[in-house]
Length: 175
Image 1 (spheres, rainbow, N blue to C red):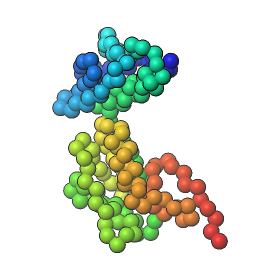
Image 2: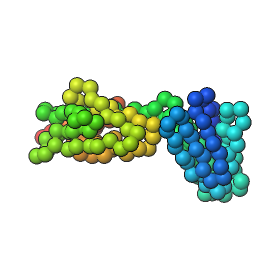
Image 3: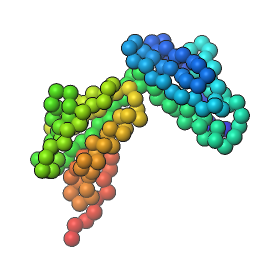
Image 4: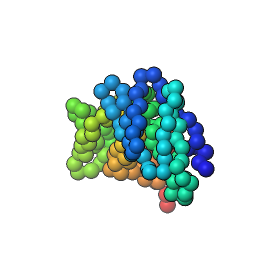
């Protein structure tokens, strides 16, 4: 059995959760997220606590048990508190700036790279070298941060490039 899947999910008072057979809808004010449930998982909601139970124990259902609980938990946390990813830019002349809601990167290429935020995501810059990405969907933020980082990933000799905050770059010795 999954240790993560067994854990109950506490639902804050401002979050509204609706259960149906195949879909759980998590909503707050004007934002709603829907999570599809596998056939082998049955949700139960009692006194502001959501529990997930298995219909049948198979290898596939056990592998989806913890994943489903984590997806539901992430959507509840995302709607109540929100998620933030922070990227740092290192390198001479490398910078990021805002153009309205869009993010524009100047990272040593012959052209600037422009990122348009998807719905529910916002960019902000701190100085020229720090990018903050905020939103309520953790998977979308992670993918967007990876796309921004892939424009100029950090290189191991000088450490120039775009890196996640807290990421350590294994440095190599030159000649």
